[in-house]
Length: 168
View 1 (cartoon, rainbow, N blue to C red):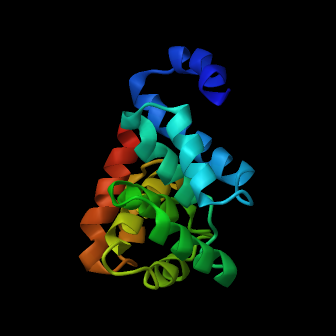
View 2: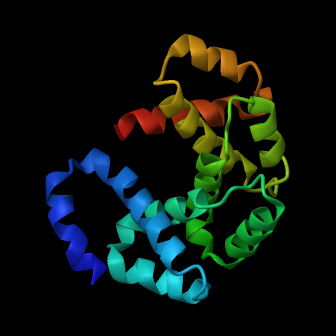
């Protein structure tokens, strides 16, 4: 029972560290159940954590995908269409976290431009979290990266950086 297994870890974590922990749990559950069907993953999520922590499992599920790979992009779209509406934004944040960013911000944002425009800004929040972490929240480096991102998404990237700082 995963719920019982993770209890000792939760006791040791500060409240602000839990979201990142749950991201990893969500990604792990999605990986283990990837061939069992979407319903099984959702049931496992619901059996593992309290409702208030479900968003982080969905964010972790989103981070599981490498959107640069066409088959995974298609699979991520299929999963996103199945996820309950209240958790879609978190799944899309995870997709932004999972962009295989290799230093080419144009490549990363090019992939995100393929995301449904209704949800794309959530991906940029995830990308912001990733950039903040990758550049250790160095303001100069982050400003340089921001110059290479479409200005309509700047605030979302900044929001992601700020959220990520709060969970460290």
